[in-house]
Image 1 (cartoon, rainbow, N blue to C red):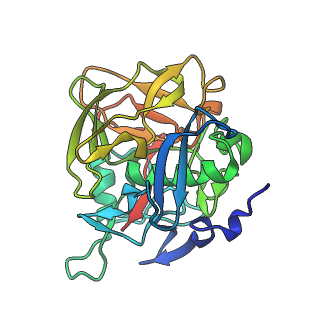
Image 2 (image 1 turned 90 degrees about the vertical axis):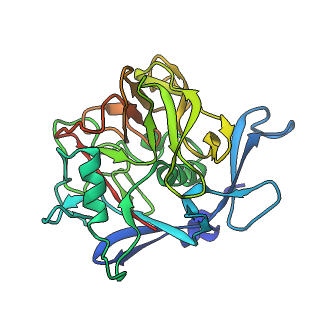
Length: 306
């Protein structure tokens, strides 16, 4: 039986909207369950993800919809990679040159610059890994594969420069260049000073970093085989797509995307890949090779909003 996702929640309620002048995509709240598929099913014995638009036994609200201990009805993610609006403020619009050569801290500030002290504009922030993971999960379930390049389009992943926002075929439900074009800084994840121990935001939405004790595998343009599954107080890595084991190539891996890491210091996260990384680009492409102070002509950012 083929499912019609245009009639299924939460997919049918994903929509592009304009907020404070920025083009954003609304992702409605959903609940998630992660576990092993039961015997007799077509995925028997495999790790699987299930989602529901309503609370159900065995499911929990995805942490992308938690903010300061309260459940949100939705979050918003930039329809496009961010561009510079001037005055150190990030924007989201079609046909713009992606904002690059910007550090992690500068990216946070550029997104938060939309917030106003009088409360008329609030909730703007740099995308975080819970939000990217929620989008990746919904996309993977809809296309029936982790391979977004193969099912949707390669995007700008085999060229020598970035293209204007919204001009490649890497597009899912109004979200453009989620893979390829330029790398994107992602909040909510960093490593300890060894460069491999995983720290993530708490799953209640307070933005506190939790040392999970889990570690990244050695990766250097290496295919991602399994995702982390450690659990503890205020975190469950099943809700985030963080590599646990890796293989020789992206094309030969379970998730069809590439991973990188570098040990020896605190590292930040960039996602998605850029114009030159070919099949290693995708929904789950994961790179912790650099410090938060790093900047490059191939690294940009994406707005989000609670």
